[in-house]
Amino acid sequence: MLNDKIALVTGAGRGIGRAIALSLAGQGAVVVVNYSGSEQAAGEVAGKIMENGGTAMTYRCNVADFQQVEKMIRAVVEKYGHLDILVNNAGITRDGLIMKMSEEDFDQVMDINLKGTFNTIRHCARQMIKQRAGSIINISSVSGVLGNAGQANYAASKAGVIGLTKTMARELASRGIRVNAVAPGFIRTDMTESLSDTLKEQVKAQIPLGRMGNPDEIAGVVSFLASDQAGYMTGQIIHVDGGMAI
Ligand code: NAP
Image (cartoon, rainbow, N blue to C red; front, side, top):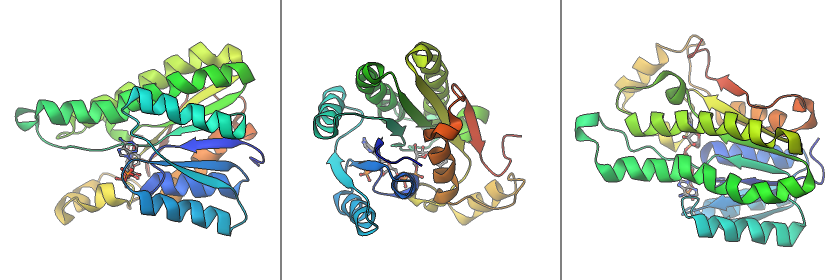
């Protein structure tokens, strides 16, 4: 159980982040539902948590912005006094083959997926070090593990998240802070909804379990990693991908 734990989930208004926020709250955590554009959706997630007897607040912040992230973390710590769980879920894709990929598309994906993860850890670390406790879970991707044609920017950002996870795990272990990552395969959300039916069928053919995953199947693993049940795990990359990366 995560009773009395304070959790910050980035990009928690939609998709996988939404499922993670609901799952952590279901385990008793107080959840800060971060969003950048989806104000209404984030409000609905917080509303659902409160309807179920939990505690939640929403906070608008672009994770790519170092100063905005600093303000968000400070606001959370001022309000609740501590910060125990950080889930770096916010992420975007801007797919294209390398010859057609613009500099802007490369930079945007790096800024949100990789630098965004750095920004939150950078500002949370001080508080977690003070507490001598904390659990950080970063959302990587099977693309960052295997590579994926058409996703040079995204795969590089998610491989970067793996390097960041392992390095943070080594740096922060002596302070009682665990840092792990989850590498999802193809999960049913807005991100994958936009793919063509042909591409979806091609992807499915590469999944040993023969189907796409659901956001709840990622959220359950994140909640486990956040909990004391995973108290002896750090620096791990957990593949939740129907077997794609076997
Ligand atoms: P999604 O449905 O497209 O949702 C993306 C989320 O990221 C939204 O909540 C969005 O919030 C948030 N976000 C985007 N830019 C942000 C920013 N600058 N600051 C704060 N939040 C921002 O995607 P998803 O499928 O749930 O993906 C969630 C994570 O899982 C991502 O890191 C993604 O790379 C990873 N992942 C997904 C899959 C998959 O198959 N779906 C597979 C592997 C990994 P707003 O709407 O408020 O902007």
